[in-house]
Length: 534
Image (cartoon, rainbow, N blue to C red; front, top):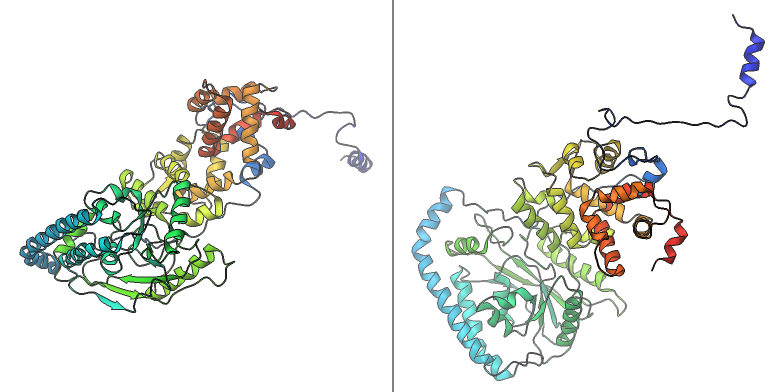
């Protein structure tokens, strides 16, 4: 046995000499499957991403874990009778086929006569910036009557109304939920308002001419300047009693009527009194909503019904509480009024979700509704634009999601440009908050949005650009890492003005935020030099 005294001495002795130096040599065998399945996309430096310090990882992904809200189970765009089913429906369609011929004749004649009358009313008048003269408006009654005949041909022999439209002087703005193309036809007949519409409708043959008679305010939803102009026109025309009422569908797209999605603010920014209107389409066998169904199919189904039910309810006028009430709160009050009257929930979906839905429908075999993320909430919380979300969806679809809209770790790593090492696995675990071994588009999108909103993300992008372009004591591994990403390498060597290249670099990094994790470990620039960039 050893001497007890010697044990005491050993315990009291320092483990290392005071002037000693500890050198820990970490070696990674890149051929060892336990470390990497395949070589990384760039040579390993002394501090490779696979061994990034925990503090660096937190810098990229934040101190807290990614928080993902529970997916919304409501699909606001789904038509619930997309396919014809049931013996009753087939028998009804067969019996209505002779009626379809008559209805098509009524539809065609009404559309043609309405177009001719509109051309006469607009003949020699192109000053749509001023109110339409009364005599021209009286001629348009012919077209308005034709629009009622069109509704009749679609099976709306009678329309149930509740309440009355308020006088134009009291409520110059009318807002309504949007379920089908039927509502604009009805309001054209009922109110002949000034319609706020997508500029794409202006080019539709015949229809474009007719809606121009309403002195439409056309807007490009993706153009900031167009939206600002539309708001100013809404305020100008709604403030003058010489113009008709202004009609808007603040949801910005059609839904199935079973929920109210987020409102755009154009109707509420002017701060004028608004009359909400509720549209209902009661049905048993045929859902008349224009969601994820083609317009020709929807028209055929309408033509082959004995009768289609249509209800209109005019709600009490809503005014801003005071002049200082912001447009968002005003819109929410109106939205609540409509959803309460319909007895349906409110969701944070928007037209951007329909765009995601449509793209997913083209490229996936599963349910496209898996790719809707309530974009209004995402935009408000993270500042992610529609175009960015569409770009992230492209990247997610390239990972070959399964029928449930999920991507496993192998497909994620194969398409991530992060190599196939431990760090790529760690990043996947960051997205996989539920630890199921697969991620959804919602998790992927919100994870990228979380990274983009980290305080140092933009700073690190600027530092990377400066270090590479100005060769500020640059680590050769940074150059090699960028060379392994051809698109980025070519971008940085464009023969363009530096401001243009720098802008495109930042745009590229914003669409590929995970790549910054490959570059920062190799940066050696003095960060104060960034402030001297041109």
